[in-house]
Length: 103
DNA sequence: AAGGTGACTGTCA
DNA sequence: CTGACAGCCACCT
Image 1 (cartoon, rainbow, N blue to C red):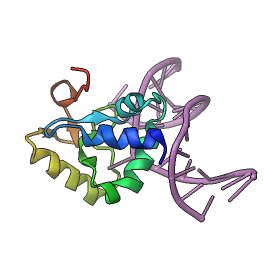
Image 2 (cartoon, rainbow, N blue to C red):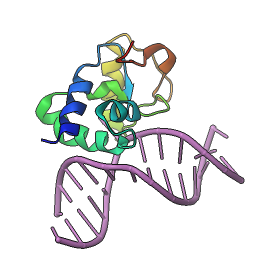
Image 3 (tube, chains in turn red, brown, purple):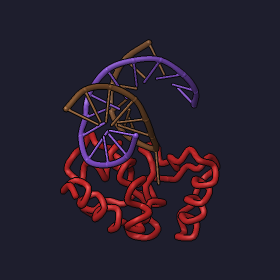
Image 4 (cartoon, chains in turn blue, brown, cyan):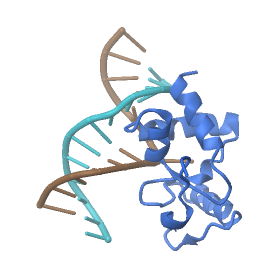
């Protein structure tokens, strides 16, 4: 397991309910500001094995990044279950729900 | 071992 | 607002 991967898992797992983080944010927090795409790969391969709260991860625009209709709806449902308001189009108000590990 | 891939991002038009 | 482009990098053939 690469340090980057381990840190990524740790970070994602630390996102509190009702909050979300962007891929770039996680990548930066994990040590590679430009490795947003790695987060995607890690989510793909680890979400099943580590039970990560993948639904709390959105893209830089604050939208659900999933392309698969079913999965994206599942993510939206999970977010709403945590009192996150998902606007039409699968968009989320980052100003209200983005999680900053620092603060 | 070499090349492809992706739930991305910032910039420019 | 939309679309095109080029970085980016761990993981999977």
